[in-house]
Image (cartoon, rainbow, N blue to C red):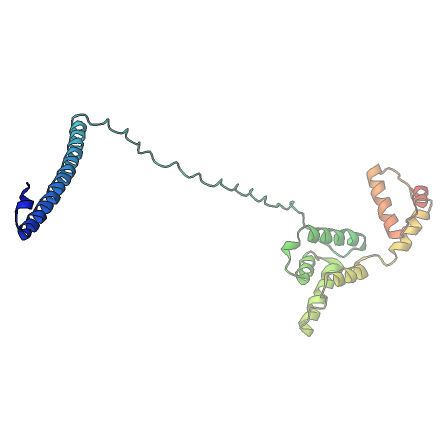
Length: 226
């Protein structure tokens, strides 16, 4: 017979409870021991791995070269502007002094006009052009006419010639031959006009001046008169 069957009912119940509880504790102990053993096994394995790692360390990683970053390319330099060519004015000759003789009037006026056209920057306004031209009026009728112009300005307070065009008009009136056209026509139509002992260049210059004064434009007429 078992002890539980021989014992009183109360004691039997107590003993049954104690046996059951002891069995649970035993099972728990087995589970705990199993967990502990597993934990110990895992720790032992990790310890072995660490010991092996310390004994045989891995080779060091190759050092990364500390190279500087490549330089940033600078933008291409803009080409320097080409040096400005300084405009040079040809050396000009001033007009010759003018004494008022009509046969020199056209040459003098042309010389003044040419100088002004080649060097306009030398004159601030048209009145400076006129005063500049009057500086060459020396002697004879030219000096007298220039004197009268300045005397008139002294009397009225106003310079009588305001523009270069007006100066040219006054100059032609006073210093061009009044009968230049008629004289040129008479010379060209006359029988005494020929080259003579003059050079070809001198004869050609004289012929062109006469043609200009006479107003001849027809090519056939020019050929005949030449």
